[in-house]
Image (cartoon, rainbow, N blue to C red):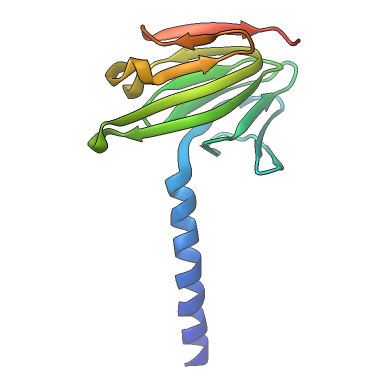
Length: 148
């Protein structure tokens, strides 16, 4: 009986934490090649295919490395070698008509293909660089930011 109560208590504590993590997921990594990392809450995590990304994650690729991110709305972002990119804000709540996609390229290269956010609310998509902000009025773009 004591084991059963302990097990039920443990499950009741673990399940809400797991669902909170799932709710924070905004997309996942795909086609990770070479050495890439996700920095989250001060922790540096080796990037792997299928890894869930979250708002405020910092994505970094090393020389001869690249990766792709597919977001919940089917937006696709490809990141080239020696790139640092911050996933600043992401909201995809179609039932509430709430959309936002904001990423910041610190250095490196990125290519973007619109998903639902870019099609339903293009004014809600922006990619910031150290010198300019790219607003989406079409379906795709490529950008290169030189290291300063």
